[in-house]
Amino acid sequence: MVETAVTVKREEMTLRINEIFYSIQGEGTYALYPCVFIRLTGCNLRCSWCDTTYSFHEGEHRTLKNIQNEIATYPTRWVEITGGEPLLQRNVYELFDLLHELEKCVLLETSGSILLDKVPSFVHIVLDMKAPGSGESEKNRYENLKLLKPTDDLKIVVKNKEDFNFAVSLIEEHSLMDSLDKPAIVQPVFGALEPHELGEWVKFAKVPLRLGMQLHKYIYDPKQRAV
Ligand code: SF4
Image 1 (cartoon, rainbow, N blue to C red):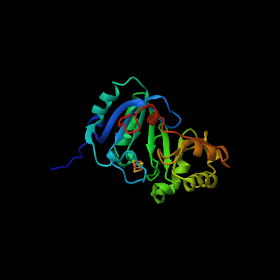
Image 2 (image 1 turned 30 degrees about the horizontal axis):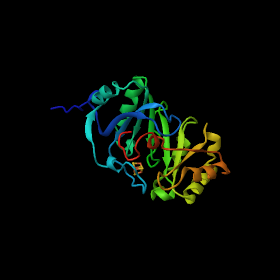
Image 3 (image 1 turned 30 degrees about the vertical axis):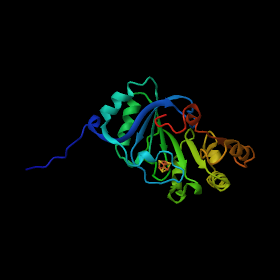
Image 4 (image 1 turned 180 degrees about the vertical axis):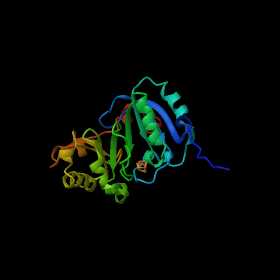
């Protein structure tokens, strides 16, 4: 008997999904745009200030067809794939292609611990490099910095001055002020560092930076999920 490989049609492929919801984008270049969020289950990191720990294990397997059907109910072209760490699930690359074919503007939030070389160029990457305060900076893959497009976002979440100094050094050492269209984002850990304090550091930094905010935590209840 000849064995044949079983080919799974793309629409039948599955991803483990923690939640899908429609909200106002709170972060980055697309802040304040109406956006659908697809949060994938699972993360290989354990950042000290993580606000989505529920994404580590909770979730159900859904087919790409089922995901597509839900996305079609939301009247927006911006879709962010987030986590957890979305690049841990290999079918996420099929989801990128599917959303692109649906003419969505695809955003990806990723931690910097997984190589970005297979992410298609149509995806707007938000690369969340980890500062020491996260407890996970040793997992950073610095070769990812060379894989960013000029239009992508680089973000560093900052808990204290040491984290801020890490962000400045990162930008200097990798000449990121020349390779990115916009300054890197430094974003305060909500509840741990006051935005105005970080703003003062940004104003007088020796490299160009942007102050980032989790605006959804001001628009909605900061403890509310799925916003
Ligand atoms: S990478 Fe993101 S989801 Fe994972 S632990 Fe860090 S903040 Fe949480």
